[in-house]
Each structure stands twice: as structure tokens, then as C-alpha cells.
Image 1 (cartoon, one colour):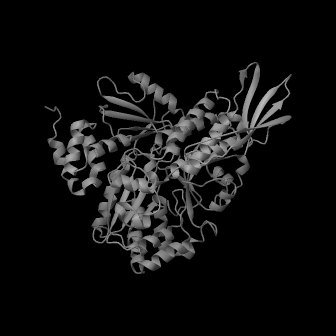
Image 2 (cartoon, rainbow, N blue to C red):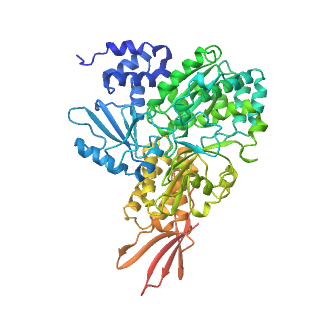
Image 3 (cartoon, helix red, strand yellow):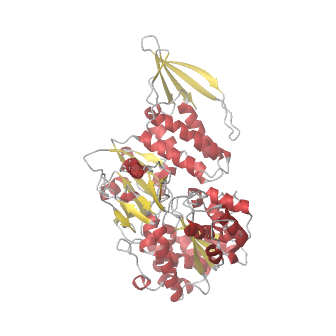
Length: 617
């Protein structure tokens, strides 16, 4: 007979039963809240109540990092060890905690009182190092570990303008303080077609990374014929270095809700979802309260209503179709496109999905009109932009600027690099971004100017590294991140991210093998060209940019029969060539159309010989 009392669970599951399979994630969250983990008996009860095959329930539990099918501690400490926190001593913090409680990362104390985990980015980069202690954010942890801030994290908001962040930086804005949904009321006096035309005229593009024109997306969903349409807010902000959506939702939730109401009116949707990452537990009560305020004042509940869905630790669910799968109670696997979400999105119905920052632009456009909105920014990149500045700057935080400000001006606002140190690199766009150097300081922060120099604006990450930082370690962490977060649906990303991580581990350990540079390029371009979704397509972008800028980082000098062998690539224009001998090296892959490449062996005289091989594209 089972020792687990299922009666409390059976009562709790009654609220999810009408949802069927789409209630699976909230049901598992509720079950784990009751028991601390998800044993076999609990999984079986959830499967029976929701009429979902037990194998599928187990598949979902095993897919998401924050569901546990083995017993864990009654309390949790999750220490972020991604790039921004690593710069501030996250590894030392994790080691200190593990030593203190006599466990290793990922282990639970013998009395089951505590589990300590190494965590991917917690979205607290501007207050690093950071950890999540149960549902509380622990930030600004001192080097001696004795002082820290615990609870709802502060909102550090700066910049030259405050259009989107006018209500941010001083706690949560209630509806009474926010005021009536004036932009939504104005939209209701317009036709849906006129609302969409205004969004198109404003030139608003997605602020989550893809930069797809918002008005065109809305127009496609509006034209689609269906008995049900959806508006989804993508609040699964998981890109390392990104934390702007956290501040917008925490400090000004009604702006996002109003933006969703306008979108719903424009396309004819009656249901909306806010999908928020599980690593933001302290935001959920704030959102629930804001939604209740909006219902009480009549903005929600009659023609349109919004439901919160909480993820369970999967970066891939930031991809729009994987997010749909998650809401539907499945593993977060991205779908093959076409069809596109505007015709076949959530529950196979026409769907508009935008991220938080994009939706916050909508009330601003409708309230002021597209002509006034376009006065902010530049002609090709209109409007305000939020940038997440972290790393080696004096004042990390969210910066709101008009498009067109230069990187130099932004870093000056942030106080520059502290400690009289010089700038070494800036990671643009997060883990899926690319590196800039001091040569890019006068580049304007617009889509077109950054694109011209090969830099993505992405999710708005600006992570700064000073001259003392070892970029090999940064790249190693990027490799581990993508290897951990790859969903495994497509082979190029599943295998490629693993191979990339292995090579970057060797590079960081100064133990690269002959040919690793060429292998790393091959893996990177294969993932870029052949992966199913944006995760795999951008998993190597930062690494490939680093290989162009600093090929010497990937050079391994080792004794081979008394000679030094350096592996470099033609992307480096710094090599001094004395003699060249070419030979063909064939490369084959099940997932790419990689052709034979020519590799040059460059022989430089050092006594008798010093060999250098250079790949010829």
C-alpha cells in the first residue's frame, strides 16, 4: 500500500480536470508543491485525473528541469553560474554553500532538508551574484557571503528617456496609480483594421530578438478565419544577460495587460495567456493581483480574459511554438514551420505572440499616434529600446534609450568600466549574440547599424567584460548553456551543442587538440544551417564571432615530437606565412551538406620547422 496520501492531490486536481491535457503543467506544479517532488503514484494520479497517458506525463516531468521525479530537499538554493554572475564570484559562492552543507552541486543533504543546484541564468544579472532561495531572490551577495538582499529584487532603471519605464523603479504600480486603460479605450473607438494600421505605421518590430514586424503579425492573425483566437505574452525571459521583462512585469504589469487587450481587440481574440518562467516565482502574485484589478474595472472578463501559465525550467520554451506546446501540456519541442502561428498557433488556432517589451510599446503607440511615436529613435528603427547592461560596468541595470544612441554613450551612462580598467569585449544579444570590441564603440544602437557590423541587437543584452577577463571561460559557459538547454528534437543541435561544449571545455583548459579550431567552425556552421529552430541556429553565433576577433584564444601550443603545433584558421588575418602546402580534407555529416574544404599547412622556420595549419574556406 502506498505511503503517499493522495487525498489532498485529488482535491487539488479538480480545478485542472476541465482543462484536460492543457492543465498538465499547472497540475504538476500543484502536485510538486504538495509533496515536494513527483513520485510514481502522484504522476499516475495526475494522468488519471487529466486523462493523459502516463508515459506522456513522465515525458513532461523528465523534460523540464524544475520538475523532480526523485526525492529532493524541502528547501532549495539555486545558484546562478552563467556569465554575469560568474564575473562576480558565483563559483566561489556555490563552492562555499556546498562545503557548508557538505553536499555537491545537484545533491540533497542526508536529512532531506536542502538541495543545492547550479542554475542557468536567473534573470538577476544586474545584481550578481544571485541565487534563488525557494521563491525568494537572493542578490548582491558579498564576497564574504555575509551580506545580501533577500526577497523581491530591486529594479535598477536608468537611461536618457522613460517612455516604457515611467512607472518602473519604485515598486509595483497598482491600477489606481496606473490609471484607466486610456490607450485601450481609444482603440475601442477605432476599427480593428485601423488599430493594426497604426501599429504597422509606427514601425514596431518584435523586441524579443527576431525583430519581426508586429503589425504584419497582427494582420495575419486578424485575417485568419477561426472560431477562437489567442493572444500570448511570451514572458519566458531566459536569455543569459536579459532581465528587462522582469522589471516591466514586476513594476508595471498593467502596461503589458493593456497591450494584450489592444492586441486581442485588433485580431478578434477572446483568450490570452501570459507564459512566465518558473525562475520568476515572485512575479506571479503581482500578475495575479493586476489581472484581478483589471477584471474588477471591466477591462478583462467579458470579451477577453488572460490566464497565467508558469514554465518549469526550459530555455527552449522561449521559442514561440515550443511555448505553445508547453501551454498545451506537452514537452517544449519547437514545431516545423509553416504553418505559422498567425494561422495555426496555440491549440492550432490563429495566435499572436509577442514578448513583454513589445506589448508595452503598444499602448504608447495607440495613445500618442504612430507619427509621434516615430519621433523617438531613427527612421528605420523607431521607438524606445530597453537594454540590459551587466558585467563590468559601474551601474548595471535596465537602460531605456531612443534607438540611435551609440555604444560609447550607453557605457558612459552606465559609468564606464570601473577600477581604471579598459574595455575588452561586449557581448551583444546574450548567449545567442556576438562580441563587440572597443572598435565598435561609436556604432549606433539601431537594427540597421548593428546589422552592418555583424552584431545582433537580440534580446537587448549588453554584457561588458574588462581587460582582465578570460573569454575562454565565458565561451565555456556559453557552450554548457546550449548543451544543457538543447531540447534534442533535431540532431544538428542535439549533437552539435554537445560537441561545441566539449571543444570549448578543452579550449578553456588550455588542452585543445590539433584540428579543434576547424572542428569548432564545422560544428558551428552545421548548427546554424541545419537546426530546426532559433536555439540551434544561434547556438554558435557568439563562439564564431569570438573566433574571428580573437583566434589566438583557440590556439593550443603543445609539444609534438619536439615541435610546437598551432591550430588557427583563415578567419585570422594575423598569421605570418612563410611557406604553404595545401591538401584536401574531406568532411561529411549526416545533417549538413558540408563540402570538401582545403586546408593549408603553413610552415614557419623556427630552426628547422614550426608548423601552422590554416583552413581555407
